[in-house]
Image (cartoon, rainbow, N blue to C red; front, side, top):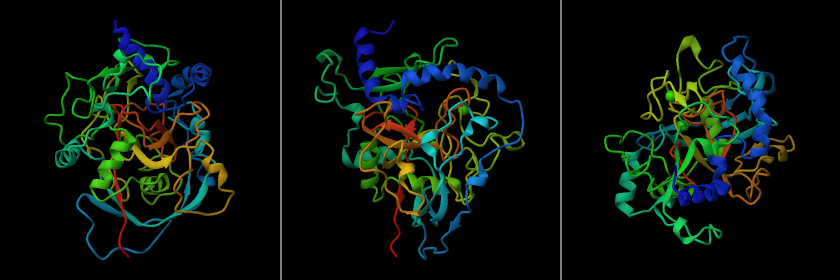
Length: 384
Ligand SMILES: [Ca+2]
Ligand SMILES: [Ca+2]
């Protein structure tokens, strides 16, 4: 039995943070409606059939030809930028597509981004440790929550900590993510699973338990910045157009696993058929066409944009150049919660629950919240 105070704080944080922890729709009411549908989808997994990526809605990717004359910064690769079709077709009819239509990823629309450098991998524990050692930076999860942020919480509940995936002992109804997420006092980037856990020997694993401002602070220190959502998607597509995965049209081409996602039975049994139960070191799966690793899966990646579920509908059909996101966050499922975009899905993504490893689909998270499946990578502008 969890201490009551921990549960209370957990529920308060949930009210703020559910966007980043349920990987999907944040409204319990909507979730409940979807459970029946998810059961039939689970049964249909592996039934075969042709891939329908919605490719007819996508135009060609026209990459810029400019290439910097100087070498790329260490650990980064050049992303040429250019014009591409952004968004995702409804994946519910696709093999392995899951049960969510992803309405916020449409209309598929034309976008142009300038070229930029991008970290080839998610930022690692080792890299984040250098930043913390140099600056003394303390992450949100290491700070005591305040009454300003949680006005209804008793003093005793305001303890530093973060959200940790805590799988139940057996199958559970998927209508309540509180069944597999706990607020764990003492969980932070050095102790991603709580006080008994450690990153010792895990320098090449992605850093997690970082809120948006933690990621942004690292990026500033490194002379970089977080990618816009459009930059992230252009890069993830690797020069391809309209393919549902960063590597192509099939989740498991020739039976191979191409990303660290979740196999088994969600959320209680992670079989690790892809080689990894839970999080994996960076770059253990093939890179995409631009040399980027783990753009799908492993850990979610913060983007600089605020999340607005209707943002794509505001384009009006014209080419959008270097979009930087809406001025304010808007998620009607949780009015008032300030959410930033997250992309790529994580080691917890599965067609039984959330298929946001499909490139073009969108995630979001309350910007002051962290969890042990959320990380980031940075980009850097080139001097022309
Ligand atoms: Ca896995
Ligand atoms: Ca990732």
